[in-house]
Structure formats: C-alpha cells, structure tokens
Image 1 (spheres, rainbow, N blue to C red):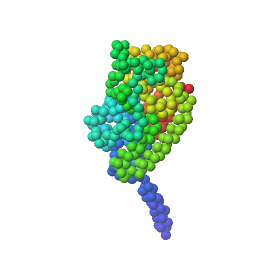
Image 2: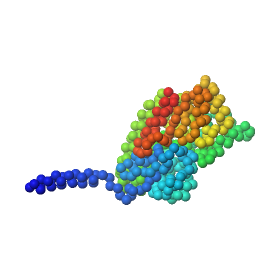
Image 3: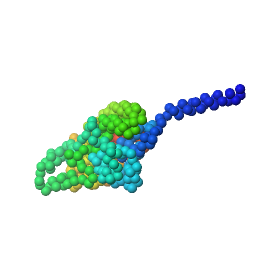
Image 4: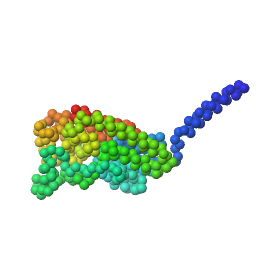
Length: 339
C-alpha cells in the first residue's frame, strides 16, 4: 500500500510532463532550416512569422548601410549555408547583388521588392523635392549648358541609383508594405516547411493585426508635426512621409557616403539662409550609418536643430519586436526634432 501511495504521485507527475511536452511545437527536420535575412527591420518581420518554429539569422547586425556595405568573409559563409535568403533586393542592397548571385542558388533567394501589392516609389531625381529649387531642377534635365554639369553628375552613383526610374528600396517604412511582406514571408515559409504552415499563418495574422494597431497609434502621435519641413542626410524617408504625412523637403546628399556636390551645397546654404521661406526646415536629421559632419556643420552654422534618425535600428535588439521598436523610435525622434 505504501509503495502504491508513492507511485501514484509519480505517475501523475510523469503524465503532466508528457502532456506538456507534446503540446510544444515539434521541430521536424524541415524546421532546422537556415533562413538568413539581410537587414534588421525585415529580419524582425520574418522572426515574428517564424516565432516558435525557427529563428532566422540576421546577416548585417553591424552599424553599416546596405547601400555601401561590402560583405565580410564570415557573412559570405553564412550565405553559403543558407536554405533561404530573404532580402529587399538590388534596389536597396546593390552592393550585395554580385556576391549573392555567386554564393546562393537563385531558387534560394527571396526578393521582396518584386512582390505584388507593394506600394513602390521611384527615387526622387534631385535633392530638393519642395520649394524654390524645383524649377531649377526641372530646367537642368533639358539644359545642355555647362552650368548644369554638376547637377547631372549627381545622378551617377556607385552601387545604387537614385535616378527617377529606380525604385526607392526603403519600402518597409510604409506599414502597408510591412503587411505585404509578412504575408509573403508566411507563404514562402509554408511552402518550404509545410508541416508548420498553420503556425506560420497564425503568426502572420497576429503580426498584421499588431502592425495595423501600430499604424493607428503613429498616425495619431504624428499629427502635430505633419507637413512640418525637415532635411535628411539622404532620401530615405519617402515611404514614411507619404504614409504618415510628415515632410522631408530635401537631402544633404544624393549619394550616401559621398559629400554633396558643390552646386547642391550652395543651394542648401541659400535655403538655410532664408528663414522666411515656407520650406525652411525645422531640423536636420542625421543617420548613424554615415559620417554626418556636413549635416552637423550646416545645422550649427545656421543655428538649426539636428537629431539622429535611424530606420535600421542600430541600437535596438534584433527579433520579433524590433520592427515595432524601430517605427516607434522614429516617431519619437521626429517629434523631438520637429516639436
């Protein structure tokens, strides 16, 4: 009798452990897939869809811009071992294109920028998109005088193009596009790992609902600064601005990582010298991925506020929450700079 009293609790305990274990999502051999994602905001959305099944690897976790970043040997090795590589595409990560094509078979490359349903914008042709310089820029496209040579030379880029025919790759900054990305990621993961398709779809549904709530909150928070002019380091905020009604009027440089051309720099100084202009910026926003000496010097010279704006989340931990933290942090920084 005494041994029976001892065995009954033991069997109950083992039964509880057995039931708990079998409720956990079983990892099949397919779920040991190596999924590599190039940048943190996209990695976050992929992580949210795959949460509970697999953990994707973040390729670029350093303070580097995908516009100019050259892959290290370690990063190339990560690509070689990948079952699937998810990237925005050549429109954003042009420096990676050649090595990616040499390293990863085409069927294993999942390009987001060519997916149906995305809202896509062309890069703006010049560095001013509002104000008194627009007519001068229109003139430059049809002028064959030598004075316009500097303007035309600004369209020659190393590694990516900001010509009016090239796509702006910062597409995740529009929550509508983030929803499309989540749906597309759920589809591809379900295709290569069908045993967990229901789980991926459930995660996608929850993530999309959260993105919609984020969108509503940011629309409300950003109301006080809608239409308020500001300057950027480079043309990176088009998707955010058009979705939320914020208003970058121009950029310090056309080519990230390169100083502004002389003619454009003179236009910047003319703009900043006219405080009565309706397009006079309230702030110059810098980026942590680039040297910002020119931006800061201009801000100090004209007694302008300057503030950091980080759409890649350098100081934010990677994972399912990163996208939401990045978007909230950007709203915080815009409000700080423009309020």
